[in-house]
Structures are given as C-alpha cells and as structure tokens.
Length: 191
Length: 241
Image (cartoon, rainbow over all chains, first blue to last red):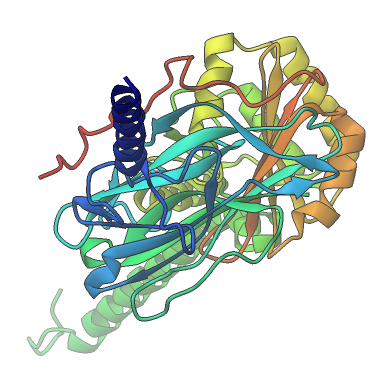
C-alpha cells in the first residue's frame, strides 16, 4: 500500500514537472526569451514565444544576420505611485508586419494600455513578425498619463537594451530593410 | 505705283514694311506683358509662404487619408481656424488650393496606409460606440479657447463617443508634449480615467500627437480580446511561408 502511495506521488510530481517544462517560457537565469525564424528558446517547443504569465517585455536586442535572433527581457510590470501594475485579460496577437511595411508600420503594435508580452517571427531571418499583447491593469488611472512613442532602430550591428525607465514597457515592433533587419520598437510609459 | 522713270518706289515700300513689323512686335510684347500681369495679380499673395495654411492631411472615419484641400464648409472653417482670423481673407483662392493640392499629392504618396500617431484599436472602438457630435463640438470649442491662439499649435480632429474622446494636435518642431500641451489640454477638457498621448514626428521633425481620454473615472483599458477586435487581416497580409 505504501509502495502504491509513493508511486502515485512520483507520478503526480512527474506530470507537474513535464507540464511546467512544456510551458516554461523565460530562461530562469535572466528572464529572457529568444525568438527567431519559426522557433524560440529555451525549449523550442512552441511555448516560449511569450513571457511567463504576469510578466511583460521591458527591453529588446538582437543578434545574428539580419537581426533574426530577437532577445526580449521579461519583467514584472512597473510599480508606480505606490501601486503594483498588473496584467489582466487574455493575450491576443497583433497583425503581421515585415520590412516592406517600413519603420512607421503599426501592424504589429499593441493598443495603448496593453503591453507586448511575446513575439512570433517566421520566415528566413525572421522576416515576418507579430507581437502578442495583454492588457495592463491599474485600479485607478486618474492621477497618471500614459505616453506612447517609438524607439529608433535596433539592428545586429547596433544592439540596444531598452530597460531604462522604471515605468516603461514595450508595446510593439516594426522593421525596415531586408528580412526585417532593422527593428523599431514602440514603448509606453506611465508618468 | 511706279516712278516717272519706271523704277518702283523701293524706299517708300521698305519703310512701310518696317513700320508694320515694329508695330506687330510692340503689340506682341504689350500683349505678353498684359497677360502676365493679369495672371499674376490675383495669386500674388500665394508666394508669401507665411500666408499659406498647413498642408495637413486628415484621417477619415475609415482610416483613409483625406486630402488637405477642404471639402466642406465646416472643413474650410477648421483650416481657417488653424491659420488664425487675420489670414482668412487670403485663405481660399484658386492659387492656394492649387498649392495645397500639390502638397496633398506629395503627402499622399509618402504617408502610410495606417495612420501614424493614432491608435487604430481605439479609433475602431470609438466608431463602434458611435460618435457624440454634440460633445465633439463642446470639446472643440474648449480646445480652441485654450490653444487656438497658440502660434505654434494646430488643432486638428476631435472625435468623441459616449465614453472617450480623441483630439489631434500638431506643432512646429520638436515639442515636449508633457510640458507644452498637457497642462492646457487637461484644464480644457477635464480628462478622466485612462488617458494617453500617442506621440509621433513627421519627416521634417514636426511633432504631432493624438490624445485619447476618458469622460469618466471608470474608463480603463478595454478588453479588446473580448470585444472581438483582433486584427482583421492577421495572417493574411504577406502570407507566411
């Protein structure tokens, strides 16, 4: 009987471990996700295109030819005015954009008040990209204003880490050049 | 007519032809001068760039870029308001329309299909909720009172639903939206709940922004997913391999 009990515990533990690995998104060491042409790291199992639940993307840089490996810094939403910002509702995708749309394209832009929580990239050298979005929750917006603007190009020749402001998150991407070589990111900041 | 010795009066005939040619030349020159003066006079002030209104395209309800040339009386009044009352006498002659049209043609070829400096999700939501024209007039009036006299600010579209509004401002050069516009806007339209600026710059470095703000403190981030407002063309543009 005792043997049977131990077996059941082991089975449950194993099942939980397998499930959590299948949905593990961020690298546990630095909380980044890496998205590239039709795949993502760390597990390359199709479940790592988004940050862990409750996180949003605070920064980005890239490596590889045509900036095809995009590394996103996942983190907790900002703590502002004595209140922890949270994430709510379901995740949803933006439209797809590519280098032909140019840097001013808004196809892969999340609505204001939502944050980019993931990214998908397909095609050779991540030529087509779209973002995953999720709503940001605050109990009261009255005292604060949200600002959305766009960062300049990030490319494999000029990597840039965007995690500068405490009240800051990314909200979408656009690109220009061959195979989406130069990545541009929108950000939103609460002040 | 012949002379008494039978030779033709060559000298007299040559003088007559010369006078005729000179007369024709003088008449032609006079006609050219008159024509040029007649054409130039009505459009002379067009050359004064300070009198020209901004060639600003506008985005219609279907997210299409509209020509900078005003199409209705209300639009003309809006553009006139941008330029200020002292310029209204020179606003809408044919020369200026031609100038604005050419600027609009240039802009039409360079502007992207998706409007820059806007949030298409909120734009669509506003139209879904239905426009509140009376509130738009009220907001526009307050905004013109607050910013209408500002020499470096152009007040653009104002759109409202029953829950939130959007207003558009443009300014010359790089403008700090937070310092330059926000206090005046906040005092004029009394925003409540979720409010945000979308800030963008054109190719010449001028600033334009759209300010979306709630009319009630309960206004917050809509659940676009639940509203079914997924991108309409997701996966259909540039088919993925």
